[in-house]
Length: 365
Image: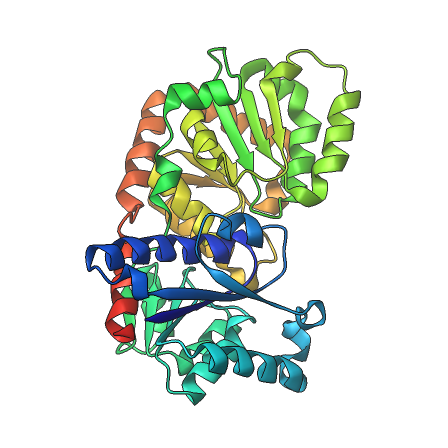
């Protein structure tokens, strides 16, 4: 059996693809067909692609750099379609699994052309315009929120939740604290802005870092783009307790340790990131991107905040004094933290990758 994966070269797409791949490897081994199952991924080049697939057996095809601007040029660029048609024809998969986005569009079209079953996964509460268009070529559509049912044909959809690798919840507390050299008793806050970082959140942390370190230990994934500039600023700061600040550009290999070591997560509200936060059962402050497509990050954050698992902070209201008040208020109320943790675990879907993998195998056999 040959399985083709496709999606944007971002952590939000690659992490669920790899999670489903891991579930498929386990299931095909249990059925004793793993030796005859092959995988290929079509994506674009990025700093994350090789990091995500380095421990897998996934062959990958990278679209040429000039093809990355599919948002404006796909329908006028015949080269994109013919390149992918050639890749799919030469590989000829039994089933295609897509994470959506502009990379997935030509793959879905070619799959339909060659009568290959296409299964796609919708991460967000509301799909983007491109994902709604891709859905016309899909046989089945996995959704992460029941709210999404209104956007797709009922006969195509099935509920899965958002696939997250179980490994993100497997790190131990003590070993994780040692990994980050955390020795004190201060609460630990894990700040991240997605795979590319979040400049606005990074700037906020820099403005209030002295006040933060008075009460908290900070693990900060700032993103590759901002890392050098933030590191330079931190090195010039003459403030106490700097040993309690742990800066990283991207933490794929030690992400589970950051989750295990922290008491609170401050993050954007990308669907995959929030699914991880729910799986590890951590309280969170979600700061959705104000310009995310289809307003999906705001919708995601609202869903989890309404359920009591997170606190939503509008990016336009992201002022230093307000942010500090929110953090201090959370840690003053232990009952609130416990309730946020409970609600997070209730909203987690650890079986999501297995559900999607079962559907892929059903159509691929």
